[in-house]
Length: 463
Ligand code: SAH
Ligand code: SF4
Ligand code: F3S
Image 1 (cartoon, rainbow, N blue to C red):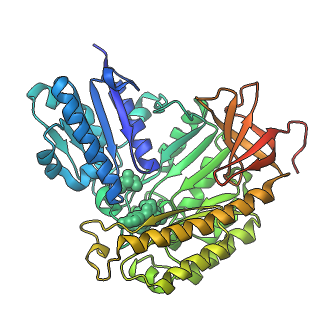
Image 2 (cartoon, protein in one colour):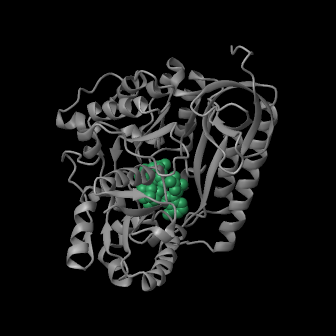
Image 3 (cartoon, rainbow, N blue to C red):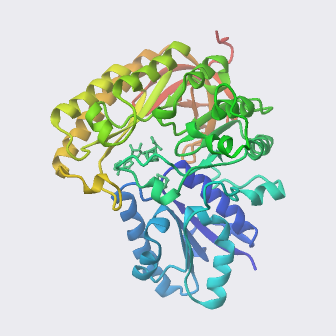
């Protein structure tokens, strides 16, 4: 009998990609996706542990589902993702309403665990990781069948995610990810190319290669002797090969750690227009002492050098970043250095976060944890500065003609389409004919800090 699953995804794109994989596994068990909670037989919560707030959302959602389960005892709850890995058996104890708990390294076991919990009537769990060097097993189900995994919302089928490397070896002192995702394990290039080809044949126009630290892609494969080192390193080699997928219009990747960012990678943006003219390069702080205590392994000057490589290659390169305010011991003057860097680089946008202590990380044990009010004030100043920069850029865009890849149509207002420029700015365009999946010139007429507004300029030729 067909059963229905309701999928809820928090956190980064890797979780979105994992949710799609899990949905595809569940379809193999005769589950179909439902957006309507009332008819769901299974709730799948794919969770994030990056900051305390992200974890709270999961805990409060679990509370709501416990009440619901009292009315509908047959319903099952599966908790997956980074909270599942970090909390494991402790979470099962605290939240007995959970039927299945699966860490990000054990996704393949989800169907078996659901089966086990159904048959035995008790909770089933699997956490932990493959050892580095083990064959990466995830994603094999869709390689075997050759089918395109489903999207979760149907909102954006133009951009699809392809996981290229799991885990992270960096251990930045604030970050939980190495604990929730394990060590770096790269997928074989052949698998990545095959998956990309299938997604593009299935209608994707843009592919985003994913990993917590994509720049170190393949280093483990080279070490094992599975891959030749090549002159420009395995990640640049991989990008060159994936870019040649027939029908692929744009190729993007995230996230890059500046430590492993190389000049040939910057040069690739100049050599291949499919790479767009945008990249996300997280810096976290504009102060050397803070960067060192964060264990980011680059200085501000080394970070600037990477920005120069990019802008030497592509002068109008748009760059975004992640920043943390209120890292333990951060002084006012050190925070000012972050403001200076933001002003200097002229980011197109930033993701700024208040530092959130994560149990088990080195920074959580450091002295000088700052009061919430100090972090609130710093965050507000930083965001206000970036807003003014983004608004200046928006004004400068007016009158420009940009090539826009259209990603989705507004559900609330049919005829309103959203796409992104090569600089990754979101653009809103009204049109009586469908635009999704097309790459078209758009005249920018206005906008705000979140989105530009434009009109189709089909007859204008791009230079
Ligand atoms: N792998 C990426 C980052 C992944 S986490 C990189 O190295 O850049 C995404 C962002 O969350 C980080 O860049 C950081 O800005 C933020 N973040 C991570 N841990 C955090 C914490 N404990 N408190 C606040 N922000 C955090
Ligand atoms: Fe976390 Fe640092 Fe790894 Fe990024 S590079 S995932 S911030 S430990
Ligand atoms: Fe969150 Fe895990 Fe991603 S902690 S940001 S879902 S890797």
